[in-house]
Amino acid sequence: MQFDIIDMTEEELTALSTVQMRLLRSAQREKDELTVKLAEDKQTFYSILISNGTSDSSLYEDKCAELDEAYQREVEIIKDDLVYNMSLNVPTADDDNPSGSGEEVGYIVDYSLSYLDRYQIVRNYYMSIADPAERIAAYTADDTAKDYLGQYYTTLYNVLYQYI
Image (cartoon, rainbow, N blue to C red; front, side):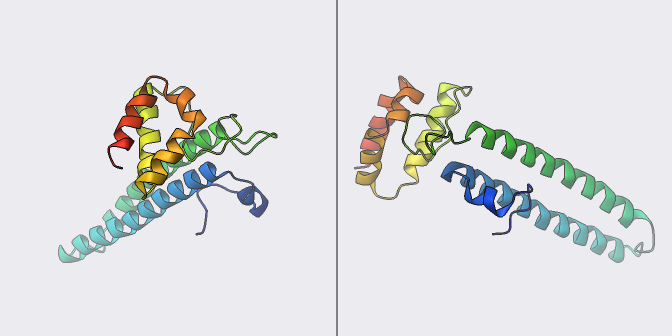
């Protein structure tokens, strides 16, 4: 995958944690989808102009400039979110874990989120594990989740246990 959402050297890419790489891939995918949508929107508008016999007017250039501006705004939002989320997950010198607990977690650990948001992030991560037995084993071994979810830890355990 080509990463052009933010400028990174090959060394910086290889130094990313698993969570940071997932964030980067997700942001790049969003940008690529926006790029495709931009091209489709431009083509659709051009087709409309041709069908109306107004392809020689300046409407196409004006509309393209408007679409390009909206595209750039969306890309900047994605980029800013990516940089912020990656900064939350900077590995320490001691370990490659953004939570600082000494174990690798596959979800974002951001204590500024509400407990409901934290619950949803952790639930989505563990539900992405196909095998229910492996899912519950990984969850029960996750000390970060115990601290991160607080009272919601038991609730999520009960939800995950229902799938066994």
